[in-house]
Every structure is written in C-alpha cells, then in structure tokens.
Amino acid sequence: MLRIYSMQSSGNAYKVRLLLAKLGHEFQLVDIDLLRGENRTPDFLMKNPEGRVPLLELPGGRFLPESNAILFYLAEGTPLLPDAPLARAEVLRWMFFEQHSHEPAIAAARFWLKLVRGGRELRTHDIDRWLEEGYAALGVMDRHLQRRPFFIDGTMTIADIALYAHTHVAHEGDFDLAAFPAVRGWLARVANEPGHVDMDWRPQLAGQMVSTV
Amino acid sequence: MLRIYSMQSSGNAYKVRLLLAKLGHEFQLVDIDLLRGENRTPDFLMKNPEGRVPLLELPGGRFLPESNAILFYLAEGTPLLPDAPLARAEVLRWMFFEQHSHEPAIAAARFWLKLVRGGRELRTHDIDRWLEEGYAALGVMDRHLQRRPFFIDGTMTIADIALYAHTHVAHEGDFDLAAFPAVRGWLARVANEPGHVDMDWRPQLAGQMVSTV
Image (cartoon, rainbow over all chains, first blue to last red; front, side, top):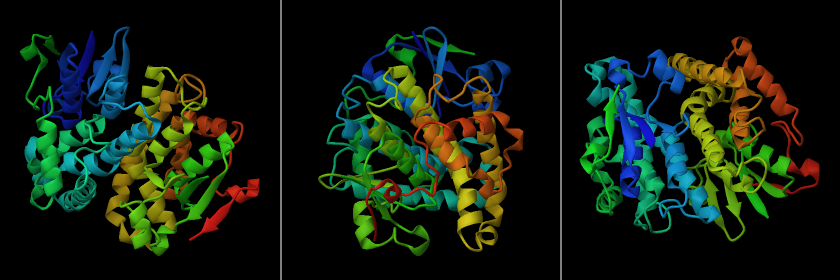
C-alpha cells in the first residue's frame, strides 16, 4: 500500500491527499508535524534528506519527494494527466509556475502568518515581497482563467490540483481574492468536481488506514 | 522549425539551447534582452504573459513557457528522458527541486550580482538569504551525488541539464563550490558528455538560423 508522509495543514501535502481521494486509492497517512520538528529527526531525514513533506513511500521502500512529482507519478494513466505530449507539457508548465512563482510567496505567507505563532513579527520584512509576488501570480492565473474553465484544455488536471491547494487558502496569508473573479470561479469549479475532499479530510473517514509517528 | 526566445546569459534559456544542441535539432534563436525590457513589450507579452524567457514557439504558433516544461516536451522519446514511470518521476522531482529550492536563490544571486549594474547595492538585504538557501540546495545535491555519477540511474537526463545550467555559473553569484566536491565532479562529467555546448554557444555556429528582434 502507498504511504504518504504528510502534515494536515500543508498545502503541498493536501495536493497528494486530494489526488488520492479523487482516484479512490487506499493509502496510509503518516503525520509529520513540521512545527514540532518531526521532519528533522534522523529517521525522517534518512527517508527524505530535504526534510520536507509530502513524501511518497512506495512498496519496496523507495521514496519520492516533491509534491508535483508525486502528482505526476500517481496520475499517470488517469484522466487527470492527459496523454498528448503538448497537453502534458502544459500541465508541467503550470506545475513549474506553481512551484517557482506561486507557492514560495502564497504558501510562505500563510505558513508564517497563520501557522507559526509570532510568525508575523519574525518575518515582517518578507511580507511585502510575498504579497507582491503572490499577487503577480494570481494575476497571471486570473488572465489565463478568464477564457477557460480549468488550466488545460477544459478538463481538470493535476495542474488544477497543484494550484488549488495553496490558492484556496491564500486568504490565510493575507491575500484578498476580490480582484481575481476568474480565480474565484475556478476555485468553486474545482471544489465541485467529483471526488473532491477538503483539506481536513483524512483517509480513515473513507475506511482507509492512518497512523501517526 | 522550432523557435526559442532566449537571453544568452540566462541560465534557464541555456538549458533549452544545451538540450537542442545535444539532440542535434535545428532551431531559430530569437534574442530577448531582459535588461533592456524586451520581455515587457506588448508583442512579447502576447506570446508569454509572464514576460519570461525561455519561451518555445511551436510550428502553428503555439507557445510553451517554463524552461523545465520545455525540456520535458523536447526530450520525450530520447535517452535524456527515461521511459520508466518512477525514473520519470525522479527526473521531475529534481526539476521541481531546481525551480523551487535552487534557481530562486542561485540564479537570483548571479542575476543581481553579475548581470545587473549596481545590483549588489539594490538587493543588499536579499543576498544573505540567497546564499543561505543556495548553499542548502548545493548541500542536498552534493549528498545525492556522492554515490551517483548523475542525478537519476547513472545516465545523464534533463534533470542534470536543469541543475547544471545555474550551478556551473554559481560562482558568478558569490557561491564557492569548494565544499561540494561531488557537485564539482558532476559538473565536469556533464561538460564531458557528447554534444555538450557552453553558455556562449549560438546555433549559427552549427549552420543553424539565428535572428534578433
């Protein structure tokens, strides 16, 4: 069975839970609390030297980090990852955009403003940069979505999952989506797709296994 | 014929030139000088609303941005992108690492310290952050390469191209690779692979076409 090392409040980890729920896969969830340093233990660093979640453990004991690489691997052969080479490249284009130009600002703002106690004071001088970069990314997304229901070719893909995870909680990092109506419409469409689960969902609710370290 | 919008000194654009040279593809190179704002013209923003290079223009007028998505698209079916699903996922894992944890620090430092006149003074308070994040990324790479000649399965892939592009000029952003012997050995191996071209190479040297805006 697949095993996912995950933190429930991590947007990157939520991507993987959302995909697995949509695909109906059974999987084991192992909670790793970054705020308690559980990602810096020798045991976890043996599994992922970068000390990050999510981390996929495959049968046989191989490990795959990087949320978007995990999405690509797990979605292969499903409707959430198109077969056509150019469409696949466009999926990757938006997933690289997400990791380069979106997540570092939007997820960082939420992490420090919402999840870390006293984070607003600790990272004061970064907040303006995160807001500037994050709003630029939201503008790119909004212009793209003004004429499309989803990011690629009119049907939901893992590019939408990758971008949804942090965007739908962007307000927790002080972002106001009022000026991005196409993004707001897309968030609602993604949440209405079959098999959607929210960030709080855990697999035991579907009769699947869960464990904690 | 493929057309690449590129800046010669951009590491992200070099990735695409290096891949195309190794594959022996003919392509047209269109120079876009970010330092002169040629990426912010209405004409270029029509092609890529993000205003970034590299940008791939396909026959028929479709555009694909994001250097690593371009690499993945162009390497499909070649030895530089393995077929096995897990190996492909590992290629993507390192390319997402590159765009999330490596390029934003290492390329930003080089851009502001080497390419932008007065950049060191303009971005003083970012330099320490870039060095800290960039050295962390180099440490992850060095530990991985201590037991492997290349990033995935012993043969060169587009993950090596993606990581080589900025790493081999990291010293131009004040990074000292002395403490990363495995990275230095890998840089030399990549440069010795068949079909390698350096950052200065332009396709007209191989009898191919070139144009400027």
